[in-house]
Length: 173
Image (cartoon, one colour):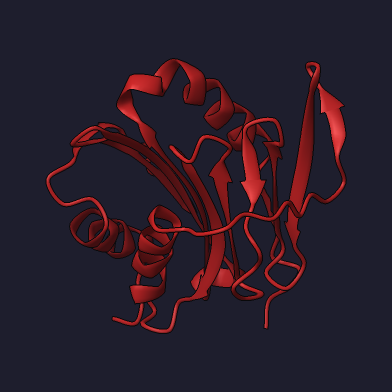
């Protein structure tokens, strides 16, 4: 399966180097500056707090990585073509085995076009939201990885990103 990109993004985010801020559409929300990352090519958007995360230079037009200012957390957003025509449940199983082997899953709702995987692996917590768009031909997702000891800091940010996350079928090819 050619979804090594998703796993590569997680690894690259963990090993990210120098940081540069690329904020789009900054607005104040609850006293904090918020930027919106929009991926016009794949039709998705999400907002993140710029007081916590810095955007890394884009590696491609399909994905974006953000790192916390202290370097302890990562926010990843991107899209993949579903070249293997995986269904939602098969892709979920793939992520569990490839990205989160041995993890303790504590939240994992599955709906018609999306699912969430959230839990702990070692000392790292993760939250990943995956949405199938374009009749299942495109997989949009965002994930946050952060230290379990800092859950009280990052759980509200996950809620904020989750509430802002939008996908669209308008950019289907």
